[in-house]
Structure formats: structure tokens, C-alpha cells
Length: 198
Image (cartoon, rainbow, N blue to C red; front, side):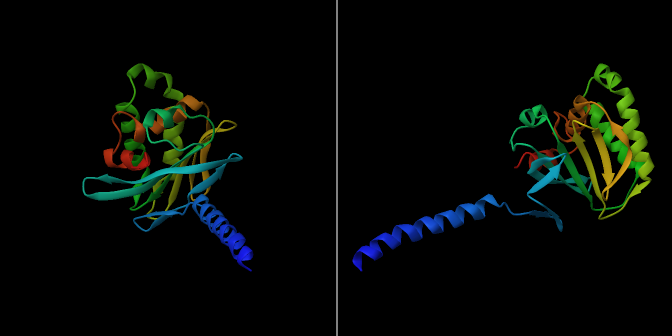
């Protein structure tokens, strides 16, 4: 009987450890401003991890909650920008925004983080991005806007799961888009910190 108890105790401890590890492996969703972001996402046949979450604030207004999904989590911008393969910037709107204002903000972010020569090299892709954004007309509070990349199709904008405009080729262009939030002059410093997992 004593031998049974001695054997059962380590087995029970091992089972408890296994259950705890399994629970830790299933990361919990993150919630900001009432918006829930899942810990993982699937895109282009790849499993992506939620790297970080933040809120874009302009003046006193909260504009959107942003979550960055990447193949491998990292806590510095250079490592995130260097990653390849499918990635997603998921935005959930906290207020209504017309297409011109949305496009203007993204264009400002591109200009702030690239040289004139770099922008000239991306001109066709930036034009395509603006056309896709203008096709949206207006994003409303609660809308889910994804800027996502897969090697097979390029950069896509979706609103509530519906693709807007054609895919835009070039992995380097998607990296340029990510610099809007992760570059040296990000759209919002606190948002960048959140996306880096801070």
C-alpha cells in the first residue's frame, strides 16, 4: 500500500504539470477597448501568432485597435520587419472614418518612414493601395480591416472579410506598409510599443 502511494504521487505531479503546460500552450485572446483578438490566426496555409496589440489615438480620439500577426513573435521592430511569409495587420475601427482620411493617414505613414527614392520605387503599389482604400468609401465603427500579405498573392486589403481591390505584388512593399506602424517615425509611438508586445 505504501509503495502504491509513493508511485502515485510523482504520477499525479507529472499529470498536473502536463495539464498546466497544455493550458499555457493555448494562449488566451487579448482584449482592448472591447475588441477581442485571437492569439493565433491562419493565413495562406500558415499559422500566425499575435505579436502585440495597441490602440491608434489621434488627438484625443481613439481610432482603431491594431493587432500584428506574424510567423514568429519578436519584441523589436527590425526582427519583425525582416520576417518573411504570411503576415497580417488587423485593425478594428473604434470610430467611422472616410476613405480619404484613412488613405491619407497611411500615406503620411509611408512618407514619414521612406526616402523620396523609395517612395518613387513603390509608386505603382502605393497607387494601387490608394485605389483599394478609396473603393471602401467609408469604414465604420466595428469594421474589421485587415492589411495582409501572402507570398502567392501579395498585399490585400479586406473589410469584414471582403477583399477590396486587386492584390498588390511585392513582399518589400508589405514591409514598407508595416513601417507605417513599426518604422522609426511610427503613426503612434504607444501603438508601436503595443505591437512590439510592450
